[in-house]
Image 1: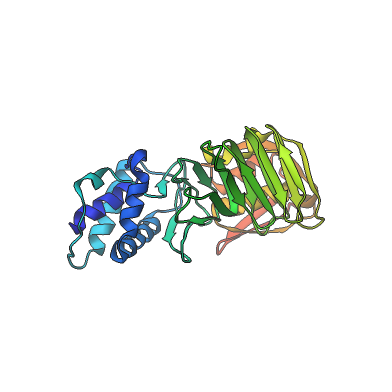
Image 2: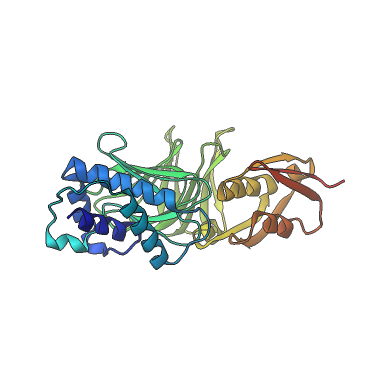
Length: 326
């Protein structure tokens, strides 16, 4: 029975479970402390087994998960599982999509909470119990209540996430960050709220969202508008934006329009999980526009940006050092 339960977990981890039974699997996992502990253990083991590079095919991921779980098995124990559970999913379905997908799931990180963490150098897609989809970018975290959707639909985001929210007029969906709350009924939007970034940005692709600052200021966004909060100045404003580019990262592209070079380097730093040190005066004054395939290496991307060969860079001990070319 233990092996059967672990097969269910493998199906969950590799995205092979059907959507309609999502809530059932979570209820089963949480029905017993042993279930929950084993599920967390194998989720972590699987996440650690993935190399944060480009996605392999689903069969290969399934075989790797199966191999690692089999290797971790110490002694048999009795798992009482009803037959219908073979088509189960989970409260949160970690569907691996695109390049460099990786997540670590913790159930009840705090009492009553679930937490999904995507480390630097990776990204992942997850499905919430209301069928809303969330893509989490590198170095991001999503936290929500274990009874999500029963009384309300609130999540807390640290980092960057793209949301496709299932419509529910009677139960608004709210994304909370450290400085802004974004409330919707059902729409698609991108939120960038890294703690080390100067600005928090909300880009609306379709529908309508309400964005509220902690001091009570509010903005209502329509498609192709961006709300931006400046942590340094406190400026909170809305302006036109090329919002389609804001979510390009979920398809493995880095797109930018008149974006400061330092901001681009920050994104590359998270995506490639490398520290970038800049000792260039030119870099502080340059902006670029373009769209880059993130399957390229960091060196190839920098050469693509540096078409007029202004810069030079070297990488040692996980740190890339960029300076002006002599």
